[in-house]
Length: 380
Image (cartoon, rainbow, N blue to C red; front, side, top):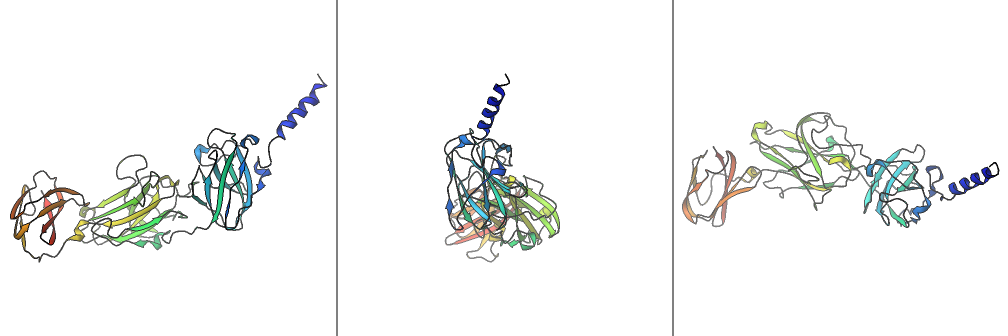
């Protein structure tokens, strides 16, 4: 038996040396990424093992992985996962600490380091393990934080009558956590998300004198991942008071739009409010639009031509209109701008049945020839 021991040792040594350079953090190989260009390596996944250096993405278990070194020439990379659909982790070369990670990606921006920093790029499987071939592409790019990354730099929204009147457009690339307290009371605000998409952005708006205003976000090109969340604050930056919060308009998984409806009873009339926007869970790029609007801002002066008389207001069952011209159409909207009922009288005097409407504030748009007038009515 003693003669067999050296043979067993030799077999063990032969097995461990079979795996390629870059199989561990310590044996990472240099990756040459052009300063202005793309590199697309590929490797035989059967030649590598699981290092055990798990990351914050894809259930934390990286599985089989390969390590590369890179001294950053830009502050960001564009990541494209290729054959075998691997994931990526960027680590600090000196400490091994994770900076950012991403799952299988397509034109995903990854960032979080500084130019000149020594990095380790860890490519890992997210599917079945040792696959051949495994490939990916990395392209150098530069990102800058949004101008409204802090509360003190909030972008002012101009209220309109509808969402599409004055929307602002943005994305969350390089947005950072502002540190403003209190944190939102809804959704999942994760400014330190390993995906680096957990930062917030800030907007401000003055609530109209009637105290009615809707704040809403939507995806520029809505996808299942454009998942925004919003919170409204009063006070001043550094000393804010949380007022309300919304993650999804309707309960569901990855509902992209968020909406908050401010009404008169909230006591915010004529007040400056701050709006915080972030990606729920902080794990995806979001391209979004945000708007502040109220149908009441479409109201005209009482002096109109042709003249319209309407009563009663408040109304319980029947709303009467008397005009000097033919009423072509009456459209009734709720406070968030949704049409709830319409009529086409085609005569000068008309009694609109309002009995089926719920109690609350409504807006009646009355079309007479080339003129359209809007009135605020109260349903009892």
